[in-house]
Image 1 (tube, rainbow, N blue to C red):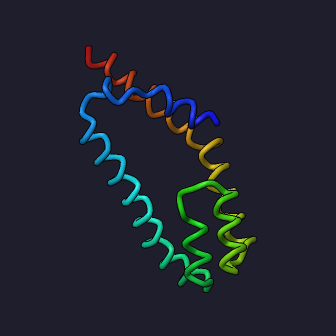
Image 2 (cartoon, rainbow, N blue to C red; image 1 turned 180 degrees about the vertical axis):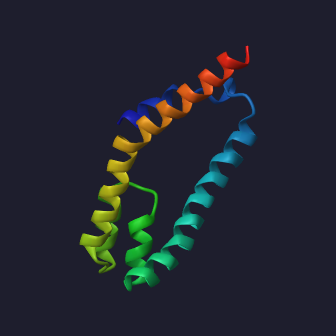
Image 3 (cartoon, helix red, strand yellow; image 1 turned 90 degrees about the vertical axis):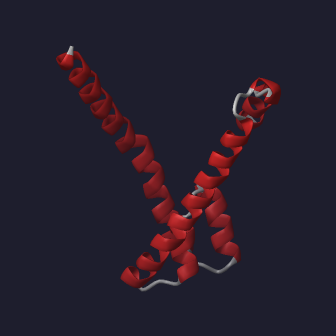
Length: 114
């Protein structure tokens, strides 16, 4: 619902560089899926699991969607859910402190150079 609301707020006629924005969005989505596919081959070999399970474990998307797909294609649901849960916790708990540290460092280096 929130995503739909935000999407309705966007007015295409006010968006500058529409074509480049669409191309970058498609390219970034393609690279995310391609990167997940490449890493899933390594994960499959390292953990000796099936390639579908490893791909769904690393695929960009919601944990609920990956779980439903894993159930439908008979992948190992516990591995997929575990990796997706780790990804979610990492994004919520590790990324914000890392970004704060990075931006503090960047701001301090700009202040020092003045």
